[in-house]
Image 1 (cartoon, rainbow, N blue to C red):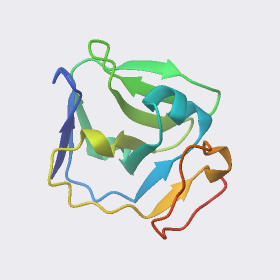
Image 2: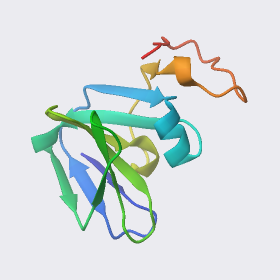
Image 3: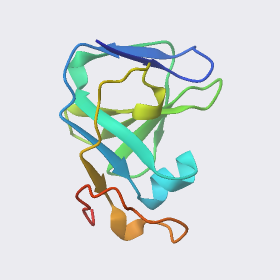
Length: 124
């Protein structure tokens, strides 16, 4: 069982599903919203139970981002037309039992850090 919450605890979530992937996103939108990279894991949308009120922001025609309306924690990312939903690894109750698998959108990475963990790096 994976559980997690926002900073203030008003939004919680849980899943018994094994994530299909765990990655660090370096895109400009994730950077602006999180202040840096955004680590997340994906599960099937129907396998994730969300408790509390989530505010969804339509960030582009490609995806919406879910956050707590009280503390502002960026918790979820949902691609348009996709049956998978991503949840923030930083919000997962420890120990997570998860491992990063890759870096995505490294072509948009900022210049103030290097990626040196040896994981695969994808431009998009």
